[in-house]
Length: 277
Ligand SMILES: NC(=O)c1ccc[n+]([C@@H]2O[C@H](COP(=O)([O-])OP(=O)(O)OC[C@H]3O[C@@H](n4cnc5c(N)ncnc54)[C@H](OP(=O)(O)O)[C@@H]3O)[C@@H](O)[C@H]2O)c1
Image (tube, rainbow, N blue to C red; front, side, top):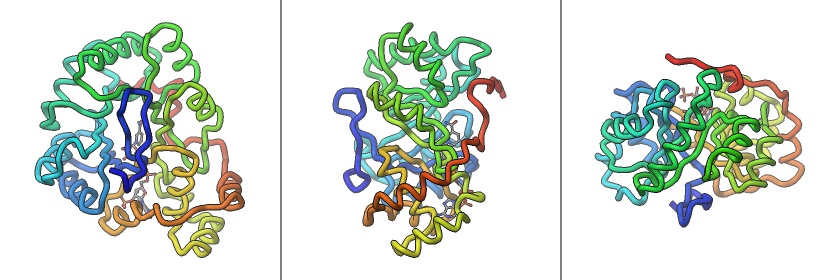
């Protein structure tokens, strides 16, 4: 795991590799091959979710890899329809993955309309206290959602996994996370590969460092202290995205990336996303 520069979670002794492999939109049948390629390339952290429908494929790749379980970091997520049945949903995810624990279990979205995320969080706390999961966290939580947990729950989430890339750098939430011992995990870290990776500023920085635009963006995440989970179904890109530990962006480079901010999301706004699909 050390090659991936692991970060400490606010949970005793648990570390997360700063770079992980995301598998959203990889169909179950292809997930096994993609995760196998990622593990061979050196990733030790896999990010899936119940709603992705590929926990089984991820589990098959893990089982076939021969890598000792404790050297892997596996995240899955509680879907919106399961806020009232957390323990069953967790057990179902474990059964589908073929694992007896995951390293990190996240509430996927607050889904504020049904107003059950505090209750769901208390159930995650229970699973954690029982030692059935290494760490618990949230995803897509807004400042309001985090402040409410702080008032009404006992444990602070170890991570908030949120949309974050140079077009949408989430300064305010990152500051709150830092002040409260919460790690920031970036989803769509490459801006979903569209538009962003064609930005001229990234080509300039890529030429300067002998790296691709995607590698420049991932390096920016690492230097901000984010955990980043790029997805690719393309073997050459899977390998390219992990080759980001041998160079450094300087202050001027970081500022050039910071100047790309548009303040607009690619994905849904968590304050209004209540999809129960
Ligand atoms: N918690 C949440 O609500 C949430 C929401 C969205 C995503 N996520 C997590 O975050 C992960 C990553 O987010 P994402 O999949 O939305 O977007 P992303 O990782 O920012 O971008 C993925 C896209 O970029 C392309 N790509 C990857 N590496 C590239 C490279 N080196 N050069 C050029 N293009 C490249 C991929 O194409 P190919 O696959 O064709 O190579 C794919 O189309 C997901 O897989 C999931 O695990 C979580």
